[in-house]
Image (tube, rainbow, N blue to C red; front, side):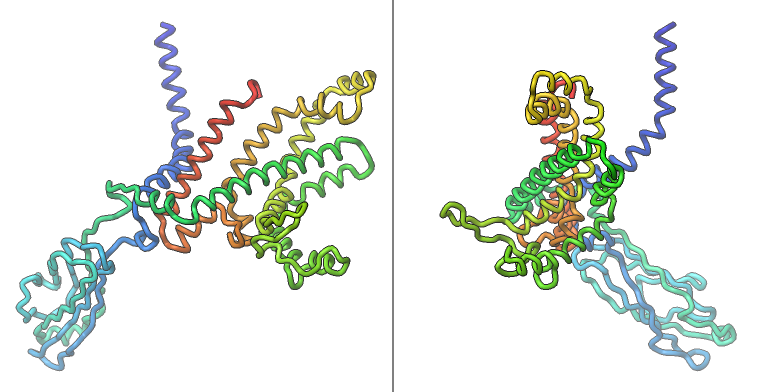
Amino acid sequence: MRGTLAAREARLAFFMLAPTFIIVFAIVLFPVIANFWISFKPVELGDLRPPAPVVRERIRETPQESSDTLRIRYQMRNSSRDVTLTTVTLTDNLPTGVTLATNEPRCEVQGNNLSCNLGNWEGGYRENLELDFTVDESFFASAADPLATVPNIRASAPNILTNFVFTLANFREVLSGSEFWPTLRITLYYTIFGTIGSILLGLFAAQLLNVKFAGQGIMRGLFLFPYVAPVIAVAFTWAFLLDPLSGSVNALGVRFGVLGEAVNFLGQRNIDINLLGLKLQFPLALTTVILFEAWRYFPFAFLFILARFQAIPQDMYEAADVDGASPLQKFWWITLPQLVGILSTLFLLRFIWTFNKFDDIFLLTGGAAGTKTLTVQVYDQAFALADLGAGAAVAVILFIILAIFMTIYFRYAPEGE
């Protein structure tokens, strides 16, 4: 009896949750599955519009009296230069009082309806089909316009998006390309240092505001500004401030002797620096966008860390004071162990979001000067080069890398955190 009741409850729960499953599939899983599907197909942007026959109707000879000829030309073509169209048919509604006079075995007239079976068309096929019609008095009595009706032309064509032909050509093209591995390396630099930078800034800000003082609420609100401000506004603000010609940073740096000359922070790939007699190339533009990433998203870490700070029992700090612990010792032995859980969670979330970040870099540099990440490469492949299959392949590689990272993270994360 209990087993039967439990089975009924399970079925009821399934039916009640079915709408949720459908919505989650439609919103989350379907785009992922569609991206995987496209990644195994050589799809270009032009393939989104399926090949179709095109027709244009013209009057080549107009009758003046009964028994004259009405000549209609149908200018037809295959919209695709590569794909073959099959079972092409043309239909048109003719005016009253016309009789087909041309001996065209592909066409016939029943009543006022013209129908033509035009067979198969190879890619790039074109044809001008001219048909002569003899008119009688009823044609002039009806005063009908032969072009009043639009001819209808149809055909069957294979759809590259829905067929079951798959290939690994997109992945071979991406992985063997000259820019994929450097782009992956830049993406990892940008993700790791941007994530660590935002968490460290958030930790520092939370430490500053974890004490009560006048204006504490105002300061907390100001610290949230980079995160809540529109990304397009803050990105263009940074681009304006760092502009080598009219930016305030370069103007002040040159005026006070900090900079010898104006520096193109967002457009210069590398800058030479001397360190203990060694000449090194410093990735200037990449470092600038990493600093922007850390500055823009540190408020997210700041909020979570500050909330965890306020949950730490004060008795632990009071006991440490009695034992004569220094502020650094209290931070290292009390504060930091209490923050391990939230810091690991923040690192996971920020790593995933930064790895998938597109708009920040695209607005600041467009991926130029050594700042192209894999997300920018997805955009370039899919839209700049019109190769949707290659763009989807890069997106799948992104997904696989993140899946590997999350597997490692959950495997080796501290138990219970």
